[in-house]
Image (tube, rainbow, N blue to C red; front, top):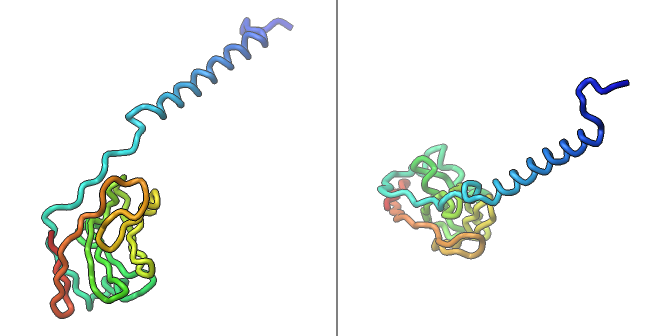
Amino acid sequence: MPNPVGMNRQDFLQLFGLGAASLLASSCLGGCSSAGSDPAPTAAATGVDFTVDLTAVTSTPLDNPSVGYVYGASRAVIVAKTAAGTYVAFQAPCPHQGTSVYFNQAAAHFICPNHNAVFNLSGGIVSGPVSSGLKQYTVVQTGTSLHVTG
């Protein structure tokens, strides 16, 4: 039976193979371009000035040893309670790609879940693909309120 399209099997396979190779090559080259690279590091928030009411329901994670932190200022800042009972505040977005860090009270570390960057209680780099530490903010406790500035 004659082929109504006018293409034999060998021509079809060659054409299909070239199309697949072109698609694969463009995907690989696109993945290597600068447009597909990691975004620029995230800057720390400036002009931070807010209060955390320690008696508020939203602050209860601070007293839970398995959590020990809350986010403030539109998730730009993480406030954590150390095992010693003091409070610290740092920029929440990881400097590498901007993913919000979380606090591990038992290990006394801030951790980025994106690439496992780890920061100490001073905001310094412990490990991970980061080139700068976390910016620390000032925390002043007055009674049951924390005033965070920076």
